[in-house]
Image (cartoon, rainbow, N blue to C red; front, side):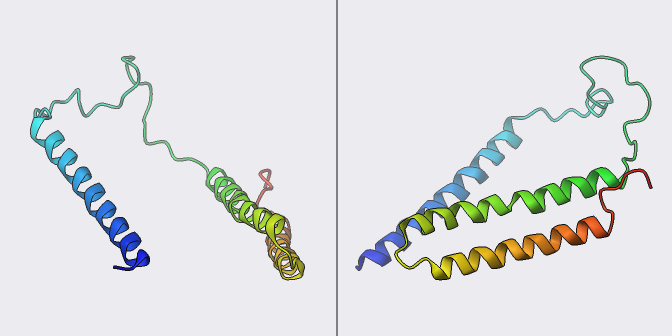
Length: 124
């Protein structure tokens, strides 16, 4: 067998074993876990303190929008770190710089769109 086939086979065996282990642990948990359903188990957990108000309070969409924008602009670090490592080890850096400029331009367009759409203006 070639080296590539052995690596692929090792990966497939790892996936099968990981899936089997997860399924076995879920089965054991279901088998050994308590089955009684009580009113207290379905209560909202508040550290033993009696609940105050409803737990189904709606949050303003501004919080979710801010979180999504944070995630979108934060994920760029995941792409910039490999670029920096590749740039450090590269001999011909022109293509890497062009890719970096394009990536930053796309981020800048997204940032300008967010500012122009007033997505972060909470007063309105």
